[in-house]
Amino acid sequence: MARTESAKRAGAFGVSARLALAIVSLAFACGSSEDPPAEKSNPASPPAAQAAPAKDAEKKAPSAAEAEPSNADLVAKGRQVYVSNCTACHNPNPAENGALGPAIADSSLALLEAKVIHNTYPPGYTPKRDTNAMIALPHLAKDIPALHAYLTSVK
Ligand code: HEC
Image 1: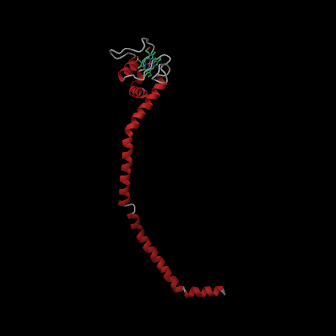
Image 2: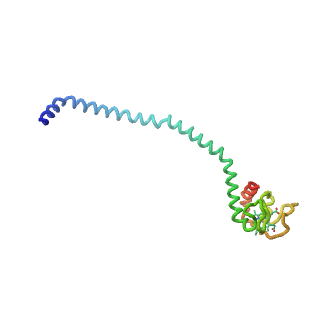
Image 3: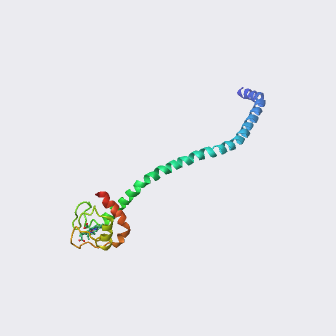
């Protein structure tokens, strides 16, 4: 019974089924013809134009903030150089006297260059100690600015 009814329905709806197929195929045809323009319009100018200003804004914010981190980087590098090269004799806190070396937190760039690179003092400078126990560390010439940035930041 069910089979015959369904067969009758299939026959009765045969025409509409073909119409439906035609409509579906048309829909596919329309869809396929609509899709490419839709894809083109999406990635085209509007999103790209929006992405560019967003990137510019992101770039501006870090670059403006970079000025401070760069000095912080120098200070951090100077601290690293100080801890690994100076604290055998100077205090881990450069503002205090160490086992051998005096406090050097207030050292000028000229004093650091003279004492660290050449184990001398700038002209007219009165040393904190009249000993000559420190050795020159000329390989740290490149790190003098970082050392200076760190030592003056501790003050
Ligand atoms: C071997 C131990 C030793 C080491 C390592 C050492 N110092 Fe010294 N430093 C001294 C001593 C001791 C003095 C006191 C003067 C002297 O005897 O040479 C001194 C003096 C100084 C002075 C002069 C202070 C003043 O105003 O008279 C500076 C600046 C200084 N040291 C910086 C440094 C820095 C920066 C480092 C690391 C890169 C360093 N020293 C590593 C022992 C040391």
